[in-house]
Image 1: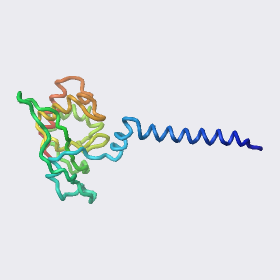
Image 2: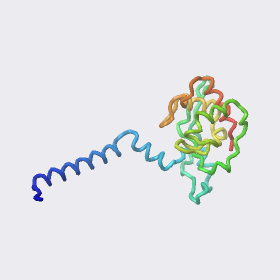
Image 3: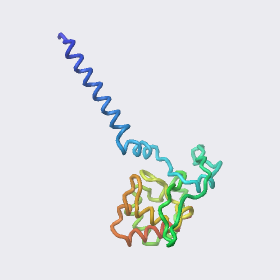
Length: 179
């Protein structure tokens, strides 16, 4: 079989173009960095947790500090309603067997179990979404409400809950989770 130099050139050029397009798409698309971060399951950042967990490890021997020592970035308006914190909570990923959820008889827990646990894990230990097993220790109920209502990153507004009543029930339950 005789290969034409022009044919070989066209095939190589096509292969290089395909690889270039794939690399540009992987790096350049808006979800590219989100997916890479979620694949590593990085904890979401909070200066509150970083200062509280200085020198601690996340169970795998790695330090869970972030070096950000500024105060809490959550703010409230003059009317008393909280806005979603600019920086998020950085909880270490620990085995579900080490997590003790409280108030699992609350309606918010049943809703969490059927809707939110697909991303956050049955014990809120994290999965596709970040760990939130002790979110109430770092955020007020109003801050959790603002975050869930607005959504961020891969989390849709209202966290895919079908009503504001469901959002309020889940938020009330999450606010009780202090780790």
